[in-house]
Every structure is written in structure tokens, then in C-alpha cells.
Amino acid sequence: MGFVLPLIGFIVLFLIIYALIDAYPKIKLNIPSPPSIPIIGHLHKVIGLDTEQQLKLAQQYSNNTERMMKFWFFNVLAIAPSTPELFQKILSSEECMEKPYIAYRLLTLNNGLLASRFHRWQRDRKFFNNSFKMSTLQSFLPIFNEAADRIVDDMRDNVNCEAFNISPYIFKCTMKMICSTSLGMRINKVENEEAFDKIYHAVNYVIESIASLQNKPVVYPETIYLLTPRAWKHIASAWFLRNFHFKIMSERRKVLDNQDNNNIRDEDSPYYDIFIDQLLKNKGLFTDREIWEHILTILAAGYETSATCLSHCMLFIAMFQDVQQKMFDEINEVFPNGDEEITLDRLGKLQYMERVIKETLRLAPVGPVIFRETRKEFEIEPGLVIPKGVVFILHIYCLHRSKKYWGERAEEFDPDNFLPERVAQRHPATFIPFSFGKRNCIGTRYAMLSMKTILLKFLQRYKVTTNLKYNELRFKSTLTLQLIGKHLVQITERKRHEE
Image (cartoon, rainbow, N blue to C red):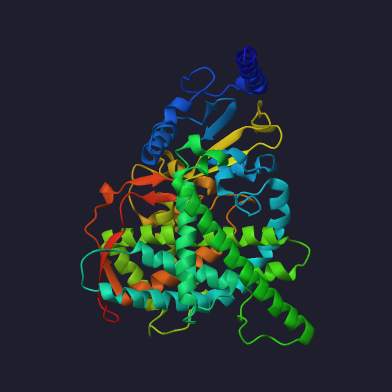
């Protein structure tokens, strides 16, 4: 036992020396930094803060930063830029295309587009760009239409009743949309209802479990996390999703083989090109595990982001009745009879609705912060070279609410911020709810079309109000930007073309 303590001391000393050697090139960077503590750096600034407090702290630093600020977390150097010019340069540079493992490891889907390393992402993104082309998205419109109709019908029991939480309805709607377009599950099949419900709860629990770890670095190591009660339900939910996916994958593979051999389209096959079929048709390009991780990434990211944005949007238009009325008037202009076919052209004409959605994403960006890591040396400004392995913290929430770029009314809800003449006056990276550059969100157009369809169907049927006050809303930053509290609204049935 006499040698154990000296050995531990030697290991600790070695790790400290290694950390200092690794950090030395980064220490010399001439970038402003708040006061720090040796070894741990700025970790003490965030430990103990809840996710709402962390969001406020980030905004405080951003508002007091001229261009960028650096932070230390042990030997990890993080740089937080605060100008759209720097956001654009970082997000557009191939030197900064890497997603840092330390920030995204909790997602566990290392083969999905969201968290994959650069070399893998580069290959897979080319494939998925074709999967999200406009002709494919157009084929999804009947699915969006059917899912929106069903969820609007499901809300009718809440007409003229007390306030209810609208968020679960929206989440289930977007889940059905994404399951239909990615796995080919028919919305109108009664036997799929139970499966939709199980997938919804399983994905929700996995997302909540990952989000719960954000403020608990002590359980980051899997061996420690596995000792917690939440971990076992997390694992059970993940295994259900995995087994369900492989069952669907096996069924779709048989159908596709049958079509190839007999040149006959299966009567149960969707008339649109679902994502899992696109992956399976490219034999040899993806392993079964990679297909599973890509589909789960699409499921989780696709339904969560659209539903979160729409939940916030419903609350905002319930608070601002003039905005809601303008949206309704526009709908009546584009769909005068109320039963016209939903097409890309008609959805494109809902310009005011699009401005409302964008203003929602400005004030409440679904992904409030994103991270990048330098793959090699990167000259961020003339004479200022960032070494390899530095993490960039890009706080979209702070950028979107900066008075420097959005004026004195930056915190207020104003869809006219997205009038063409105002947009033309701003730097293109001032508004980046879906990130920016080559590694931006691939589902941007999918999300906009699905959200417009749900809002269209909802506002044709209902008027929405709320007793909540805009200036009392509070948010927290987890995996996505979440409202603290529920999206409580009341609905009344509309009469067609009512004033």
C-alpha cells in the first residue's frame, strides 16, 4: 500500500502537466476572458446553475462582449463569438466543421447527421441532400394534411373549455408526420395508433433523459449513469425503438426485394419515397446500425424541433390577437373556399404566416446553442490564429435577442422584423435558427412545410387565446429551448370567414 499514494500523486501530476502542455498554445490567444480559477478555469461559473440561469448568464456575457470571449474548462478552451460576421465565418469554414465530442456525446447517435464526425458527415450529407429535395417534400404534403386534420379533430373536446396544454397535441402530430415519412407508417391505419403512441413516449423519454444529464457532469460516464434509476427506463425505451426499427427495416427490405424481383409495387407501400427505403435501396452504403441511427436522428430531431417551435408559436399568436387575425385573413385569401388542395405554391403564398414562424424562431430558437471544433488551425481574424481542438460556443438565442442587431425592441414579438426590406438591412447570419453554412439543418424546408400545414388547418378551425402574459414567459436551455411551464391556451370554434 505504501506505493499507492505516490502513484496516484504521480498520475495526477502527469495529467496536470499534460493539460498545461496541451493548453499552452491556446493560453497565448489575445482574446478577452472573465476572471478564472487555476486548473478548473471558468467551470465554477456554471456549476450549480440551473438551465434558466445558464441561459441568462450567456446573454449577460454576450451583451458585454464586443466580438468574442474565451472560457476555460480544465484544459478545454471555448470561444464564444457575439457578432454575425464571426458566426458566419466559423460556420462556413471547413476548418470548423467538426462537432466536439464533449458537447454531443450525450446524444449517443454518433452515426447520425446531427452528431457524426466530419468525415462521416461529409459522405452522408451528400446522400441526404437528395433525400430532402423539393419533389420528395411535395409528395409528403398529403401526409402533413392528414396528420394536421386528425390532430385538429382531436382538439375539439377542448372547445369552450378551460385552458389546456396544446403542446402534447402538436408533438403527437409531428411524430405521426415523421413516422409516416421516415418509416412508411400509415396514419389512417387503426393498428398503427398504438405504435405511434409507444414511439412518442419512448422518444420523449430518451430525449428527456439525455437533457437531464446536461447539468449533471458527475453522471456523464456511462458506468455511473447506469447506476441511476432513470438509466434503466432510458435503456428500455431505446431498446424498444431499436427493435421496432429493425422490425420495420426487415419488412421494408422484403417489400423492396419483392418489387425488384417482380417489378410490382406492393399495395401497402406508400406512394411517396420514405427515408428508410431510400437508405435500404443504397445497398452497401450504410450498415444496419447506421440506418438505425440515421432514422432515429430524423425521428427525434424532426418531431421535437417542429413541435417545440409550433408550441411556442401557438402561445405567441394567442397572446397577440392582431397577429392571429392577420394570419387568418391571409389564409382566407389563399384558401377562399377552405377546402382547396394544399400545394407548395399555396403554402408559399402564406408569407405573413412565414414571418410569424420566423419571429417565433428568432425569440425562441429551438436549438439555442450549437458547438463547433477546429479541425486544424483557423485564422478567425487577421493575425489571430485559433489552434486545432478549440471549441466554439455559438449562442443563437443571444444573437437573436441582441439589441445591437435587432434594435431596442429586440425582446418584443414583431413579425415585421422579417419584411423583405428589413431583412435586406441585416447581415445574413443575424438570423440562423437552423444554423448556417454547409452543416446547417437539412430539414429546414421539411419543417417549414409541416408547420405551415398545421397552423393552416388549426386556424381555419379555431381561434386561440391565453391568460399567460408575454413578459412573464421564462425559458430554459436543454437540448432544445423549453418553456418553463405549460403552453396553456383556450380555443373556440370559428365560423368560416368570420371577421
